[in-house]
Length: 464
Image (cartoon, rainbow, N blue to C red; front, side, top):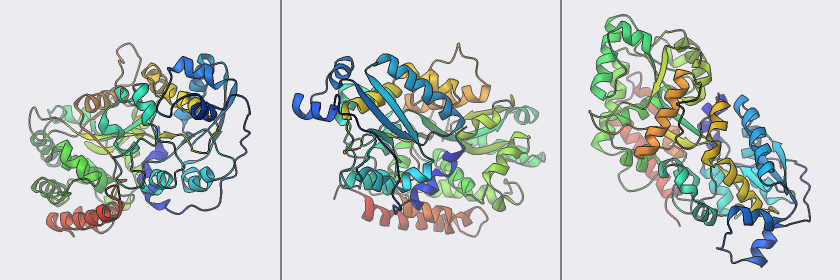
């Protein structure tokens, strides 16, 4: 579904330097300048109800810029634009699109220029959102978040990476500089047919998961299929192991560079030891270090492995296979909550130099509203909150993915990606990946993560 998302964790780190300016022709309109309204017609913290706000912006053209070029994006956003214009007929939407890399690598120069969109997608990283906040190129959205009840639409965990300090530091804290309309999850895919062959059900605890791995190996079935060439196995494998050994709050703090403990805890050492044990016991397919997730996705779809740690961007690849299911990471023990990455998609922000702030806020309010969650689901995407799918015709694996997201939202066990700790990410996907082959011990893996984590906290953490 959202294949470009798979590589976004890497791109978020790589796109640190802005290059040539993005040439976008944006025609401003003189009628109904919503920024002028906010400055002259109301106090800064006063936000009118949506219908009143729409009347006060007047007849305008709202220019939006996004990178929603996936098959799902090409379906859902034209529908959202049409319904938005029907709801607010005085606001005409002009949509511009760029690929993810072109947009984010040039976004600082774009938003500092003279032709600035009114609403734009950003990226949850220091290189993008943090840089834009520090340069005062984005409007803090808290007044809209609070006035229009946006926090009720999803979990605090999912929204963590849409917040950053005005200094560009402290990802996960501070004002909202963006708000998402869709989400992406990472968890555990399983082959139900192979589980039945082994006389097993989808495991819900660490003990059940380990028992399934051992039984699969004993019966000639690859327990875990994964890719080493693009780091997915070490990334998502360690996430799964963390979820089976540490509580969500501890994991979340480490990933956001918050607190003082980081990865130097007994639970993280236990997670690293579990990850290392899978390699030592031969639970990965032969040659895993040289294959990409594009290959492993195809192989898993063909039944060549029992479990697969991967994201919901692969739901589309599996939707026609009734044997494949998706679930959050197994729990530490029976009754304990289960975790998984349940992160925001690309957040929508309002450029400070845009002409129609209030109308842009109405756009974000509209596309993130729960009444449109079905629009995303029907297009093959995932909304930011739970949705009743009982009357919808969906593939089993898609229904599983939605249920997993709803579970994590309800239990507040959503985990972010690793955008807040870029140095630790580089170790994780670099020297630290040797934990899969036994070249790096669990203790050394945690030491490497902690050392990089401390540097990340020193450079990016806090509000100063």
